[in-house]
Image 1 (cartoon, rainbow, N blue to C red):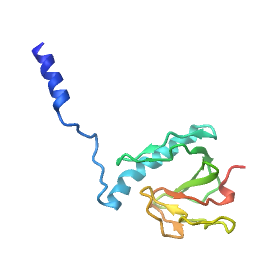
Image 2: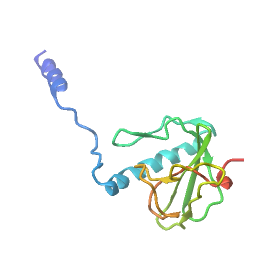
Image 3: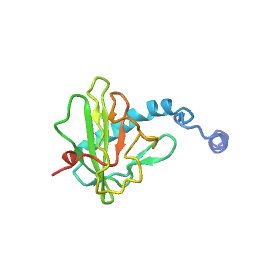
Amino acid sequence: MRNLLLTIAVSVFSPIVLAEECPTSDLGVFLDHENPRAMAFIKSLEGKEPGFKSDGFRLCDGSILFGGWSYLGKTKNLKQGQHVYIFRHGKAYRAVAWVENKGIPLPIPSCPKHIDCSAEGQYALSYDVYTFKAIQPGDGPIILYYPWKSWLPA
């Protein structure tokens, strides 16, 4: 009985220890930590039916990405090392794309002329604006707000 009470007391009054540290103070370290996890999550959707609604992906800082987004599929006929996954978020299409380390840079679509593009069109997982004109090899997943029409499902 005494051991049981001791176990309960230690469990209740011990500080909570997180399973992993979240390196939020350094953006590069944060992305190095989270990018592989996010890519694995997105790849895991390949077996889902088009229209599957994602609960999202929880970053180590507790924020959730892709929550409520409907997975539509992976774009085909891309160049070496390029990956593009298409989602629907509300009425808008979104793409999440990356290029493997030895892949060919992937041009980023610009905002279509018929849309009021008050927001930037491409973001890293941290929601910092991705400023390149093409996704560079090894940069991790980039969220694209204006995917090419050729990427969208028929």
